[in-house]
Length: 319
Image (cartoon, rainbow, N blue to C red; front, side):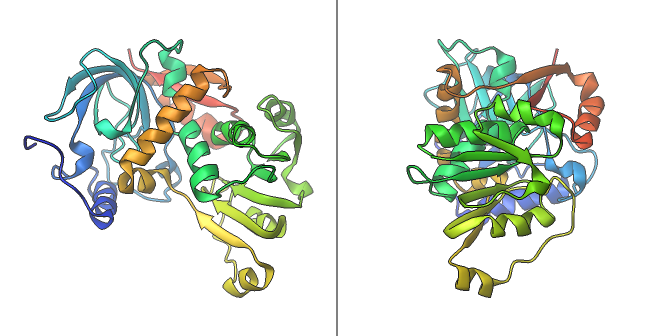
């Protein structure tokens, strides 16, 4: 790595860096994601490559979020120090399932003087950050607007309902895939929780991480001028097309959000959202339900995620 401040990168160069990582399994050494610092890692979890949505060559080291202590700083990095406790997004280059990880200084949140364990801190960067970005930057939520979140008891879903209330939402509802998850979702602040097949309607914002037929019901659930935010395909179902003419005639909008692409294109903004999320959790404004496993239990953790029975967040401890 060269000396001085990191170079300016165009959005196209940043996105190309992600594509290179997915194609080759290794970060580009001339990419800004490699500029920053190395730190010892405590916990992390979840990667959408599991389902083959974006196949990667093997060997591949997953892990999109971490917490731990800074090991060393890259040239030109200021405002951070070796030994400092931090949480970080590693979503651009992945590689979080490791004892030492390199990431960008932009996507770091210091944990100094915060009453947060590293297990909880490791559960914040992906889901809690996403919740604020999706609602604030993509859906552009306005006071008293109504929000429907599919998969409300899952990792991201557990944060979206709470973040919506913090951002001034009125009605906040969620859907779940089984009766067993209804009370869990209610514990995350949802005023209404129903089974997904009940198809609630009358919302200004619908957030869909499930995919398949839920895309269609999401559009149908929107009020005029409503926004459907697509940010996952947990069902693994075939894509569902939504005709542009339908959006035109019904005054509805569909937008997408991908944390890796956003973090690559707008690293400073992703970092600000991460630090906002860390502050909200530390203040008790966002509740996290975290279960810790060891790194050698990673396969079991993935099996549990695939089963659709998990709630809240799983993290892996690297000893």
